[in-house]
Image 1 (tube, helix red, strand yellow):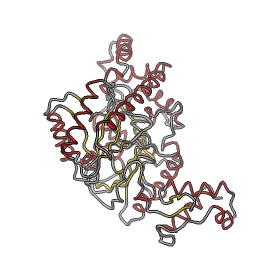
Image 2 (spheres, rainbow, N blue to C red; image 1 turned 90 degrees about the vertical axis):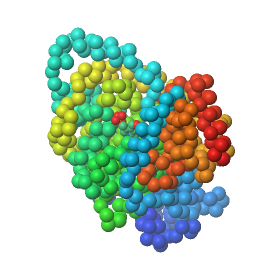
Image 3 (cartoon, protein in one colour; image 1 turned 60 degrees about the vertical axis):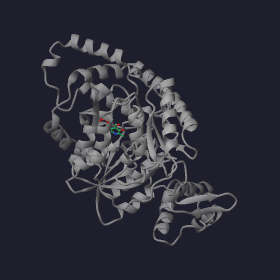
Image 4 (cartoon, rainbow, N blue to C red; image 1 turned 135 degrees about the vertical axis):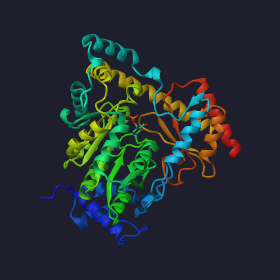
Amino acid sequence: MHTTPLYRQLANHYLDAIRSGTLKTGERFPSIRLMMEKHAVSLSTAVQVCRELEDYGVLEARPRSGNYIRQPDTLPKPITPPPLDTGVYVGIHEQVSSVLKASQRATIKVNFASAYCASELYPLKILQDHMIKALRQDQHLLGAPGTPCGNIALRSTLARRALTAKTNLAPERIVITNGATEAINLALRAVTQPGDTVAVESPTFYGLLQILESLNLRVLEVPATADAGINLFALEQALQRPERIRALIVIPNLQNPLGSIMPEAHKARLVQLCAEHDTVLIEDDTYGDLVDTEQPLSTLKHWDRTDNVIYCASLNKTLAPGMRLGWISAGKWHDRVEMLKHTQSRGCEALSQLAVSAFMKTPSYERYLRRLRTTLTQQRRHMSAAITRYFPAGTRVTHPQGGTLLWVELPVHYSSMALFHEALKVGIQISPGDIFSNGKRFHHFVRIGCGAPYSPKIDEALATLGQLLKKQG
Ligand SMILES: Cc1ncc(COP(=O)(O)O)c(C=O)c1O
C-alpha cells in the first residue's frame, strides 16, 4: 500500500516534470478543474497539490490568470533569497573570527550582535535558589564527578517536555552537553569523516559554519527563505548530484538568522527526503521554545520513522546562558555519541543540571517561558518600527514569529561589513551578513538582536546606524 498521501504523490509527479524540463518556467500550470479530470481526484486534493507546489516555490498564482511555473530561486518576498548555490565550500572561519575579534577589541555600548536575551529576562534568582537547595541536599555534590550522559532527572524532564512538541526522546538516549555547540559537534563527529560534504541552509548561523570548517568538512549551502526555511526543491536537486551529501543541518523552528519556521508538511517531506537519500538529518532546535505559540510546534524528530534524525537543543537562549546546558538525542548513533562525549569532555557538571531540572518540573517554568515570549514580541516590534524609521528607503525586515533576531536587508549597494566597522568605532555591535555564508550574497544584510528591553539608548543606537548608512548611500 502507498503510504504517501495522494496529493503529495501528484505534487511529486509534477515536480519531476518541472525538474526534467517537461514543464518549463513561465508555462501555465494545469487548472484545478483539469487536474480533477485528468487524475480523477477531488477538488480538495487538486487544491492541495497546488499549495504543495507553491510551498516548494515552483508555482505562482497570477490573479485571474491561473497558476504558472516559476524557478524556486526567484521568490520575491519578503527578503530576496540567494540563488541556488551548487558547491561552495567553507573557508569562513577566519572571516568570522576577524569579525568576532574586532568586536572583542572595541568598547561596546550597545550590542545588537547577540542572540541572547538580556540577563534580567532570565529567572536567575529562582535558579540560584534551586542551586542552594541542591547543595544543601547533597553536600558532596561538588566532590563527585558528573555522570557520563548527564543527570537522569534532567534527562527525564527534557524527555517529558519533548512530548509537548510531539517528540519522543527516551531519557536513557539523551546526552547532556555543553550547549548546542557541543551537541552539533558530537553529531557531526559521529556520522562524518573529514572531507565529507554537509549541507546547510543559506544563510545560516555562522557558528555552524565554523564547526564544519573545524572538522574539515565541506559545506554545501542550500537556499532558504524567511517564509519557509530551506528550499526543498533546491535540496532535492542537490541530493541528486553525484557528490554524496552525508548530513544536513537544519534549524526548523526560528532559523538563525532568517527567523523562518518550516511548515509542518515541509518538515515531514524533509525527513522523508533525507531518509531516502541516506543523508543524516541533524536538527538544531535551539530556539523552538521561543516560538510564539501556546502549543509547541513539532520537531523534525517527530516525523522521523527511520531513526535518521539527530536532535540537538539547548537552554542557553531560553533559560540560562551561563549554565551552558544543551542536549542531544542521537537515535541509532547514541552509543557512538556517548563514547565521543566521554572522550571529548566527560560528563557535564551536576549542580546546574539539578537546579534546572527542579525548576523545569514546576508550573512556573511554562509561565516564565510565556512571559519571555510576550516580552520578546514587544521588543521585536519596537526594534522593527525603529529600523523602519531610521534605515534607508528600500530596507526590508523579517517578521519572525518569535525569538530575538531580525534579519534586515538593505538596498543592494550598501555594505554591512562597512557598517559593522563604522558602528564599532562608536560602540555599537552588529552582525554583518557576510558571516552567515561562505559566499558574498549577504553583503547587504544585517542581523539585529532584539534581546534587550527597548530603551532610549537602543533607539539612539538604531538612529546612529541609520545615519552611518546615510553616509554610505
Ligand atoms: C542556531 C544556533 N545553533 C546553535 C547555537 C549555539 O548554541 P549554544 O550556545 O547552546 O552552544 C546558536 C547560538 O547562537 C544558534 O543560534
